[in-house]
Length: 452
Image 1 (cartoon, rainbow, N blue to C red):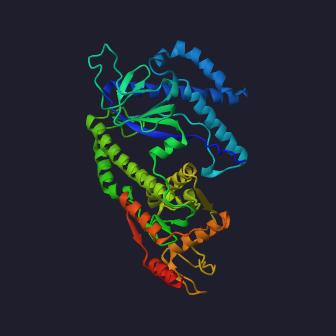
Image 2: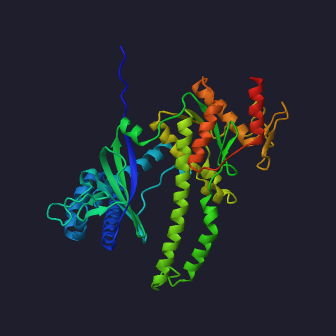
Image 3: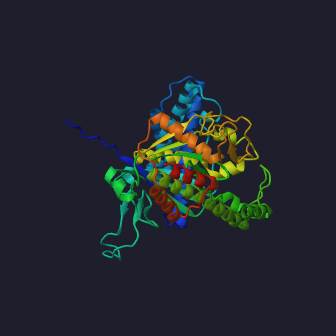
C-alpha cells in the first residue's frame, strides 16, 4: 500500500516598492527609531543580567519594558506595536546563535559575536509588522469615500496607525501572510512580505524544471564567473568595476561639501551634502541590484536544467584577506551565488553537493588523477605531464567536481544531451546572460562524440 508524501509549505518573500510621501517617510523614521531604541534597551538589560549573574529571560524583560514604555516613552504608541515588541525576539535569537557558536568552538568570522547596539544611520532603517496587522486591498475606500466603486489599478497595503499606502506592483503570491518588514533607503520605501504558500502555488508562479537525472560540475572563478564541465563559461557583470569611476567622482564631490570633518565637529551639513548623498546612494543601489539580479537568474537557470550540481566550498573569508583580489571577489558575489543555489535547490527538489575546501579540483587531472602542485594562477591551461591531456584549467576543475558529485550520490544514468545544451544556452540568452565556449572544450566534445 503506497503512502502519500507530505509536501511541506514554502516561505517566499516578495519585495515591493511603495509610493512614499513625506508623511509616510516620517512615520517610517519614527517606527525604525522605536525599534532601534527597544533593541538597545534589551541589550543593556542583557549585559546587566550577565554582570549580576541573573536569569536571562527575554519574555519577562518584554513585560517590564511595557511598564517602562508607558511612563518614559509614550511616543512609542504612535507607531505599530511590533516596533517595540519584536526586538526582544530578535535579541533572543541573536543571543542563542552566539551561545551555540561558542559551544561548538567556532572561531574567527564563522563565529557570531555578542549583541551590538543598533546605530542610527541617516536615510536607512527598517521595522517589523506582524502578519495579523498586514492587509491588502484593491479598493481600500469605503462607501463614504469620493471614489467608491471605481476599481483601482494598484494594490494597497495597510500600515498600522498610519493608513493605506499604494504599491508599485501587486503581491505576486497567494497564501498566508506571515509578516512584513518595511525598509527605507533615502526616499525609497520597500515592503518585504513573507508569504507561506503551497507547492501548487509555487509551481504556478515559477517556471518548472526542464530536465531530470542530469548532473554537472561548476567551477567558480574571477576570469569567468562559472565554468561547467562541458566548457560553458558565464561571465559576471562586475557592476562595481563598471561604476567605480563614477562612484569615485561622486565621493570626491561629497567630500567638498560642507559637513563635520572630525568626531566633535559641530558644523551643519549643507543641503548640497544631502543631495550628493542621494547620488552616491543611487550608484550603490544599482551595483547591489545588478549583482543580485545576475545571481538570481544564473542560479535559477542552472537548477532548472541540472538535477545534480557539484560545486566547491570556497573559503571566501580567507580569500578576502588577499587585498589584491578582495575587491574583485566582493564584486563577483560568490557567497550570494552559493546561498541562492542551496535554498533554491530545496524548493525544486534538486541536490547541490559541495566539495571539501581542501579538494584539489584545479590541480588534479580529470583524465588520470595526477596532481600538479606547481600550478599557479597564471597557468590558464592544464597540461598533464603524466597522460598528456591539454584542457582549460577551469573546465578541468568542473570535470573533477562532477566526478566528486557522482561518487557522493552514485552514478547518474542520463547524460546531458546536445539538445539539452541548446535549451540551456537559449535560456541563458533569454535572461541576457553573457556566455562563451572554450575552444578546447568544444574540441574535446567533438572527439568524445566521434569516439561514441
